[in-house]
Picture 1 (cartoon, rainbow, N blue to C red):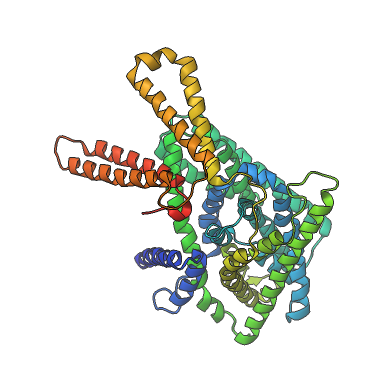
Picture 2 (cartoon, rainbow, N blue to C red):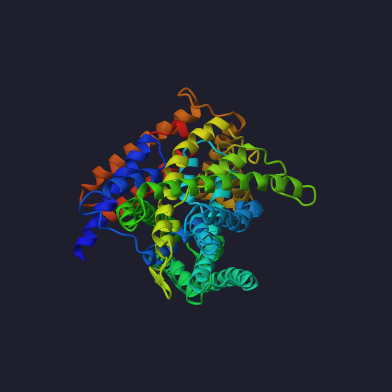
Length: 539
């Protein structure tokens, strides 16, 4: 047991080093981690680490889904709901059907049920890879929102297809009417359980005297409860976590204190980084185990099958994105749609952003070794093909997606105001409303109370500052007064930190109070750096 813990500690240290390398090379870190895992799989001491499906589905999946749900914008999710739901449900089924037909036609020993099983495994794209690439390249916010929204739902639909196909292989029977009924039942009840448990935890956070530490612990328990209870009754645990997470995220302001929100965001960010790093590293580490299980199947032949299915999968997603664009343009004549003219650039980028990840591999590994009639048919080949699909889509599409984004130059047609100007406009409105509030309710105290007067003066200064910044486009050259102010302010914060550290050497100052003021300086630096143009930010 001690050896296992040490191995995972080494893995985390290696993950940190590889993520640093990915940042230096400006490559999405999931790609570097998978390739790093491949290299480590041939090193003694790491090659023995294997993915257990239960570990992925119950330990890793609920918190990662929950974190994604909290980070998702309700407004963007609703705005692009038709595109997201079409790719999360109908297109997953279409993809599974195409893979089933191709598998039956070209892979020896494959039936339609086995083809659907393979399709259900490899149909859901992994959003972490795509969004980590898109955030490093200039891409419209709408594209990132659609990819993130799709990822919240397509895992559930693909796992439902997988479970139906698995049952068909086991029993040799498939009743369409019963399958359709169960499909909707699994979805609806999964969402209902997630919302019910979310309501319970909402009441706990809102009504009981919790502390920030208690709120953070409860937030980690929440997704596991949602997932467990839904799966216990054979409904969708994924949709339970997603729906419950979205519900609690929407009510975060009412149920959590400001300290719980700030501390919780920091803790979840760190935990999410570690979990994502581990799952991508574990994908690469599975190569020796998967190759060993091929047994009597020729390796080059199996690679050929994997490349065939990968090509069909990529082509199918591209065709589906263009098909969805055509349908959207047609339906815009009858209903209001978010984008009545998608064009050809967005479908290409969205189609190419379909990298596969750990959910696919965990689903393949969860296939039982034996069934009542004997060994599970084609299990080893399905597992190997899944690994090849993940490797091809993650590395090939992941490395070429930034080039494609720069080549196509997709314009953001849905954000008339740049993020920088939005930031300034919000700050300007906050300052204006604050001044109005003080003048209307505390006019006497503004004159009589020095501290309240200083508060109003600060907002007056902010109003003038952001009005000038908004009305004059901010350049990123060093001569710009706004940028010079921000850089000087950052240097001043460093000087203030040095003073606090020197004061901490004197016995009359309490270190806890010194740390509190250092934390306030950190918050101030965060606000200043957010106002800097991305290219102008300094360390």
